[in-house]
Structures are given as structure tokens and as C-alpha cells.
Length: 122
Image (cartoon, rainbow, N blue to C red):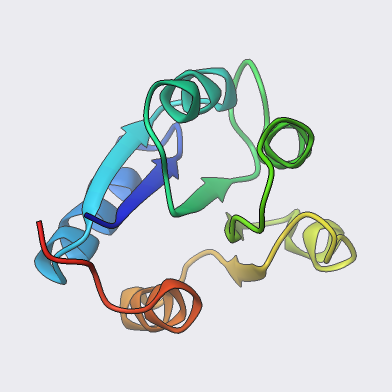
């Protein structure tokens, strides 16, 4: 089972990503902010994280920093952002890829496949 965590406080964006990734065969968890994303990561292993930058409680930069500090191994983190994408592009130590909003869902799915491969069978 290949699991992806999507952290975004815009439920429509989180749902669109989740549906597209689930259609490809991935298992998807969603979280509405960075703190809930960390709780989900502590509860279940995840292969890749997709996060928004601007979220309440803990933003995407704080989330990526916490993931890198807490989880050993190379976990790909994809950031999606409107205005803050340039900040993230300067942080290759935190983010594996950065997409500007609005994004093309097919490009995000293709990047996920390139980073972690096709979903493992259940």
C-alpha cells in the first residue's frame, strides 16, 4: 500500500488531489493544517506528503521542517502555493518539488509517480 498525505486547509483542493491520486490507486490521507498532518504521520507511515504553504496552526514551511526533523529517511514533500512558491523553491532541503497554484492535476500526479513510483498493490 502506497500512502500519500495531503495537507491543505482548502477542502476543495485537498479533495480534488485525493480523488485524482485515489483514481491512480494510491491511498490518500488528508489534513486541514500542519499540526493535523504531523498527527497523521505519527499514526501511520506515509510515502509522500503534498502540502499547501498557507494554512492555519502550522504552515507548510513549518510542517516540512518538522517532518525533516522527526522522520528519518528521504520522504518526498511537494509544496503547492500561490504567492509563497518562490520562498519554497529556495528550500530544496525541505521541498522535493514546488507547484504554483493553480496547478494542473495531471502534472502533480505525474510528479508523484516519478518520485515514489506506481502504487503498491493492497
